[in-house]
Length: 119
Image (tube, rainbow, N blue to C red; front, side):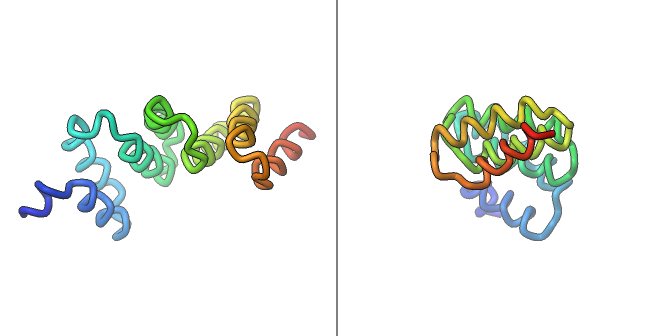
């Protein structure tokens, strides 16, 4: 029990690793106030929602992560995929362009932009 108090993100990660995504979301809600300024926490929660195929909620949490640290390529990649899931091509392209600003040689973002612009 002490581990839950001292290392709440570790417990959250264990739930995710076990595939207990719904339980992880419920747990994240209980510790959210402790991690208001932790971009990684918001990324984790957004990723769980994306896994659960709730792209709109995923975007909300991914945006919170990016508000705290706007140059995280991993967050932007999940955000791109969430926009694609919602069929928001222009928003996905914007994310890819931001990725390329951060990592000019990111072949995945370049390829995706090319593919999306040709649709």
